[in-house]
Length: 150
Image (tube, rainbow, N blue to C red; front, side, top):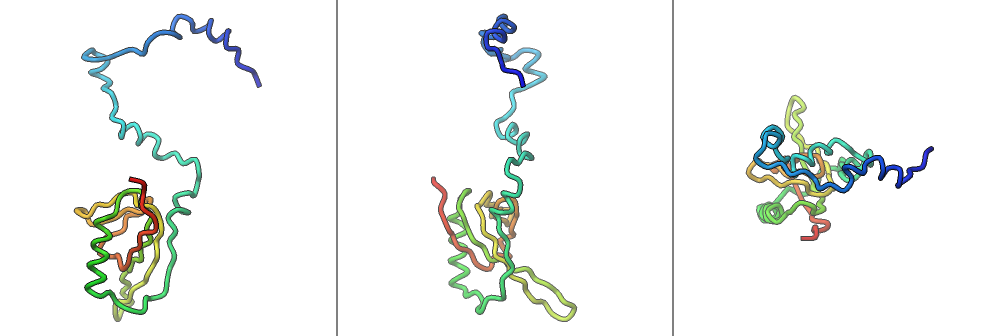
């Protein structure tokens, strides 16, 4: 393994090392290579995951038995209020129900998902917990575990 000699490197790049960063505004280079939006730049690094499996761990999904009671209209209103108060980063626990048609009748499977809210898009009908989109019409119950620092 070689050590980096700072003086040697400085000599090698002395003609450019102290120069200012080039500014490209209204020139040919800028026309061909406009400055990238910060969100677009972030997408470049999105596939990179330094901690493999972290998203799965943060977004735990557990099958649970059928809850004892059905939702009351009052509880549905409370759930609606909770959904509208959510922000990105809030830690939540959601029970979702998935309809299963077994040939004769519809039954429901229930799963509990715990994780941080990544997005809330009521106009599109979903909340995203880590990397999983959950349709709002499948939410059976919700609990806010921890609010993000706002």
